[in-house]
Amino acid sequence: DGGITQSPKYLFRKEGQNVTLSCEQNLNHDAMYWYRQDPGQGLRLIYYSQIVNDFQKGDIAEGYSVSREKKESFPLTVTSAQKNPTAFYLCASSAGPRETQYFGPGTRLLVL
Amino acid sequence: AQSVAQPEDQVNVAEGNPLTVKCTYSVSGNPYLFWYVQYPNRGLQFLLKYITGDNLVKGSYGFEAEFNKSQTSFHLKKPSALVSDSALYFCAVRPPGGGYNKLIFGAGTRLAVHP
Image (cartoon, rainbow over all chains, first blue to last red; front, side):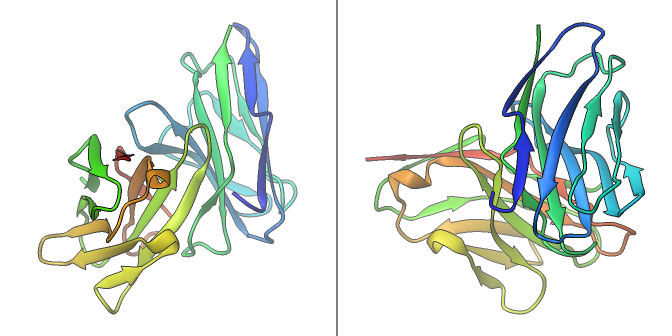
């Protein structure tokens, strides 16, 4: 996991609430990614950012939002529009657009 | 459609025996190929990757993977399994070209190594 931190480890969301997941990296990587993991499925890409102040939707962006104001930080907000948010969320980073992605330890989001 | 298949949900191996975790892909061109491992409630750890060159790639923790272009496969192997190898293994493919570092993941294979 080293070099990429995610917080909190567990997060509980109430109905209608927006919650924000933190991802920080000290690897000086340009690119960062957010994935969602559901049981029995591979990882699915939510959003990615190749450079500061730029980000793009992935395969399942609906109900999520991100920002990339600093190179080391890429927070993910799960909005109330995401009707099935319960999942394990993984942040990743890579040195460049064609380099190996390295993952953080993940945040498990649960709905109350 | 581009896809990655891991045909076995679970692989059971006795400690000390060789292990193989299978991966096949459906991607045109020459993709990059990756293996990651995930321990319970943890992130994915990078094991190894194939870009070009020798078809046998060596990675972390004694793992290796064999690339077979004609069979579009990238099977993960280890000569002697350890109980501590028990985890969830993901194969991933990066299609050639494209504007960003898109990875397509398989659904994962759970490896159980028994003492």
